[in-house]
Length: 219
Image (cartoon, rainbow, N blue to C red; front, side, top):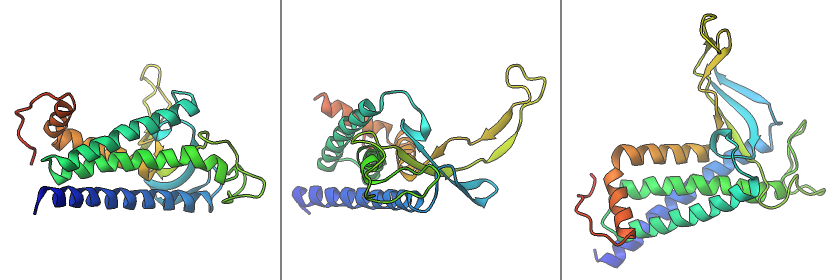
């Protein structure tokens, strides 16, 4: 198989993988948004709930930056990741590395879609089930949509011992953050990248900087 065919095949693989992850992410968010009110939860097991919240910040509900700034930053960062995917597709990198970066890109785009469009195409979910394309308009403007989260895993619940300074007697929950499928794509992608593809990532950065690299390709 010639190089051009290989590049096309790898690019198609990355594209199909990204689209599949995006479809799963947006389908889950649509189902939750159009069937549950904000704050409503469904118990699946003692340690797994579908718990509908929305956050205007970063992954897992963290809030650091202004919403519009964060949305624009996400778009710019995603553009850079997409460029890296194109670079990887043309280079002699493993397919696993390509899919890892593609998962991170898909997760970023999944939350960007919420940020850009959801405020315009949905009405609010406070005390009601949201409607898609409501006649009265959406709950916010462009770039100000809130990210839909729904996965909650309180694996361990209890209280800190009374004798413990500061937190003594307080409730303890592990794992407390509520997240969505896009967050999971980003987290898993980063975890796999660190675990298996640090050399490939370093080699990619070296190629971006136009410096030769002697690092062998990761398995």
